Image (cartoon, rainbow, N blue to C red; front, side, top):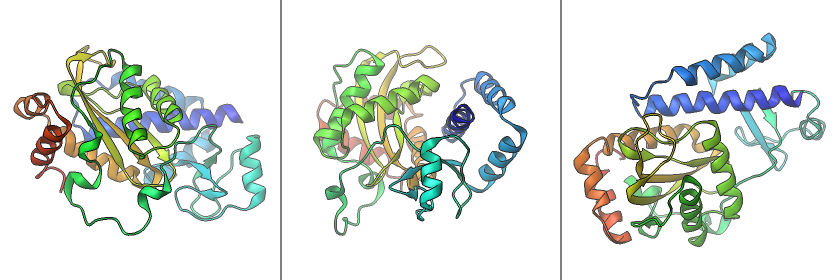
Amino acid sequence: MKSILNQLIQLQELNFAMEEQKASNSKMPLAQLEKSIAEIRRQLPAAVADRYDRLQTRYPLAVIPLAHGNCSRCGLAVPAGIVNAVKAGEQLQNCPHCGRFLYFPDTVARQPKKKYEGKRPAEVGIARFSAANLMVPKLAATTREENIGALTKVLGDNEFVEDTATVAELAMRREAILSTAMDHGLAFPHVRDVEGGGLTFAVGLKEKGIDFGAADGHLSKIFFFIVIPTPATAFYLRLLAGLVRTFESTESRNALLDCDTPEAMWKTLTKLTRDTIP
């Protein structure tokens, strides 16, 4: 049964990758992605595949991790018997409240609670998701793994994530399924199902570019590392669409790449996204 659950998780990742491509209006060919989705779906028992399809029509995510005995999406407590069965992994289990498939994650990314205690400032636009201290104008990284490690470290140093090694590992697992590189030299490495906190991202620049596995073979130069709590999954796609729309323009990309300090990056990013990320 664990193999079926793993297939469901992989199918969901591929489906979500497809949604990312649609949100970004990517011109990259999707035939291989569609083929992989169809192949995994064919391997699932018909009843499981049908239930997954029904759940997908209602929710952005149909396969959800347990978090402290609760469904991490609807937030309601799951009976102890079901929690134990999910941990055992011998049979598929569903949340008794929302019906989603449940799984027990082997590793979990978390955001520190202290960052979000009390009332947060009434910020607007890009300031809801990032800050000047999360800007890296001159990445030293030369590989995808080094890039993810560097941006994860920035988030960790500024106390936006705990256990940076786990966050980097989960981001690399996502890259192994399908590269997050997109058109125009942009890349959006990320981790989902993060416990606590809010949608947050760091930005790194590498003018010479890094091979991030883009389908068109082009190097990536602008990197948005995004930390996505489960409740923010749908909004992440809107943020992604806004960022891609902003940097479709060569002029906008060059304006950001010309920045040589975190403060200049933040000022430029805020200005460029004023109309695309309200």
